[in-house]
Length: 175
Ligand code: GSY
Figure 1 (tube, rainbow, N blue to C red):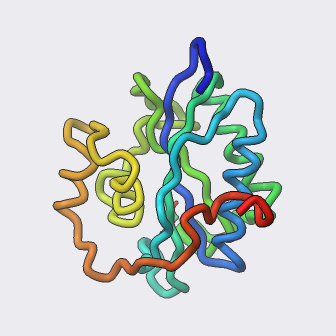
Figure 2: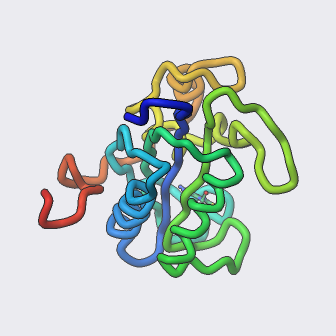
């Protein structure tokens, strides 16, 4: 854990094109390789029905907690750079994607700018965000309630466990 001036932040990960588990693992390894980011906790992966455009493949979703010395905007840029490195293409809004790395919550920050709203404005309504996030941050307060409380108001009936190794996000070979 960083000694000084670090903040905690929570990320949502997902995708539905290609080897999404590998892409999510690569994204987390890229973040952890940044000198100003430390990976603290990673959730299991879930298979989740598509939200938004429903006529597309199911997604895999996960969540992670990090410590960071970056400011929110800098952290967002690092997340977007990881997506680009993994060949994420922005085509249809709410459409298929190889990887999403969403900044959900940044400790102590509530803001709304043209590029970044924190906490993420729709996270508390989305089972695919809350289900993995609850595994690593059930008591985190977002928009006035805990992640566990928001999750209990969601329909999670269709969400499935996605079997992986416990350390699915580590480089293969370190496992
Ligand atoms: O950032 C959200 C991308 N996305 C997802 C997702 O990650 N999971 C599910 N289940 N549906 C989604 N629809 C969109 S857009």
